[in-house]
Amino acid sequence: MFSFFKKRVSSEVDLSEIATDMHSHLIPGIDDGSDSVERSITLIKGLMELGYSRIITTPHIIFDMYKNNPAIIGEGHEELKMALSAEGINISTRAAAEYYMDEYFESLLEKDAPLLTIKDKMVLVEMSFSSAPLNLKEMIFHMQMKGYQPVFAHPERYLYLNANRALYDDLKDMGLLFQLNILSLAGYYGKTAGELANYLVKKGYIDLIGTDLHHVRHLAALRSASHIMSPIKAMLDTGKILNPLL
Image (tube, rainbow, N blue to C red; front, side, top):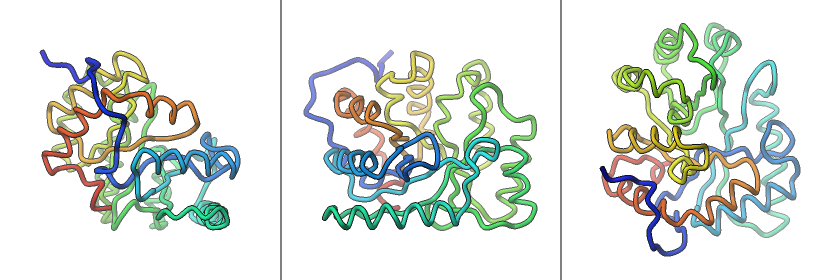
């Protein structure tokens, strides 16, 4: 069986065909991503060196950890843009969010609070790494009834789904878009996440590709993972990957 994780001789990592990185944590000091403007600038320069021309950064909204909202995120993004301009760094940046599916997220839907979107009505969502919420499908349906298009962040990283891969089928049947973390293809998150990434790519389930960039360790791993170029090119060649349209 062909594996996307077999290293091969390749040119340096060039992600310019992806064009837009739509999952990262670059607004300083508001979640577990960048902790300073200087670090954010370093990370953004790194993304540009990898070939990205647009960035949609997506800070966490997790009520009991990162109590972010559109105002906090918008203010942080404006400060970051000003810092980039002062450094003469010219790249398109936008801000959305990565919403944790919990009771607080449900409350936002209930009261029709406007959600931050990647584009149009596309909303990036994640769930617990220990177990899926019992009402996962109900929350997704609720989002859809509110007119949103759910984008499932890094489905390969929920390792418990290895024993319940049928849930991937169910979620795709419900109309979810799947966003793969690039570093999963490099085995960064471990063997099982890598195997699940390989599985989802082969199923044709991936719609979006993100770095989920938090820190310089992620950046270093991306720079050294030239063997990921083959599966990325294969996905882009299908014409199904939406990043260039964002």
